[in-house]
Length: 288
Image (cartoon, rainbow, N blue to C red; front, side, top):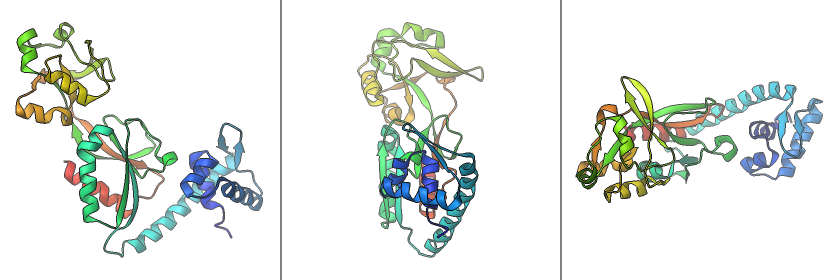
């Protein structure tokens, strides 16, 4: 009896939503509400303030949540200890990653991983929007560059470099910039930002650039550069093959910024199961 309502309480406490909690638990919202009401009656304390717009925890609920979270984590640990006795890991993993990096780097490795461990079922959602892992029920998110959410645990998988590239045809027409100040005289093709990042005298420096083409697709910007339209700054996984083939030439290398991290992040209050840990280790090994 003492366990009744605990899962529902923790789910609502973490999502601040009865409907999201019901979705994560795969039960009806009415059942979540009934379990919370029964738990409040048994404890003789109010756990949530509920309005039409949001659900928030009472002071008593915040204290209760800390203990309940540890209890559920302990139960997960006990269950995973049994799972580890099996030779082949199994179960479901839900992962999200940025679109292009996911298509080029992550999904091929996911396919290899599933081929090795056929009992594991992986659902991957590619999006360039930063999703809430708990609300959306994700086990792992792949994130690029600087991390913003300090409530997540992060493990670095690899790193990326940004390259400033241009075609030989463009250089023949307009010449080559050798300093950052010369960029203002060139057609710089823009992505989602109106500035490019560099390092000068060991200091990070953002240079505002402009051009006649702006697009949120790195693939389209590469195509434009190959057609001699302008200069681009993009991560290595967009341009590496073209640099190696000689179709694009790197410039301003002395100002290239330091490497950015590529991370696997997951909620700090969620037990990292063996199958998830195995996937993170596999990505780390193969992305280095």
